Image 1 (spheres, rainbow, N blue to C red):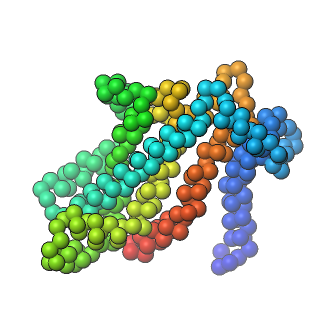
Image 2: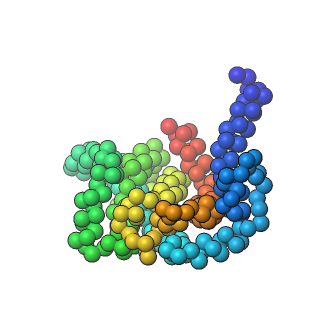
Length: 273
């Protein structure tokens, strides 16, 4: 394929349209009534019922959507800050510090990535019962404060980004280990940490299975609240699509604001590799 060939543009445009159409259809149904779901041909233009659907969404019995948004925001931000802090700190330790059992400990951490999350739900739920955290927000926060993938990612990024000479120079200047991490290593890891933060936030915001298991209907997260909008007798698709639209707005805002940071972090890692 030649550079800038028409086929390349056609392929890219087709991929963009196929990827964007589900989101656009989400917007169309969210701005109309549920009857449009079965219409043929389907409407392709947004309607004028978005404000009414949003009002019905926040007034829906059993969904508690406003509280769900607040719970998801608190949980996602807390998990993101914790994962970034501990991952960059542990990544720095595994990449640049020499201590006994370092490699064995790293292998143990990576080994936890091989265990499916679903296998740990029952014992983790039993722990939450022992702590009395069932239907408490900390139950969806504490188990995810540390990420094995984040530690591995930051370890690799630190290995490639931070030269040993920079750390040795900081030690010569009299800086202790945590100060080296805070003033020398962490600024250098900012692009990679930004990428990790964004993916962690999106993963925590979209988490469904664990909140469904440990929370109850009166104290949900966003994905749990979306599930409550569907009943066994009747599904209001316009209400569900409106909830999904509102739920992805924070993700889109975070992604748009930090898009340059994502691209910069990925490209910098690719160039250094």
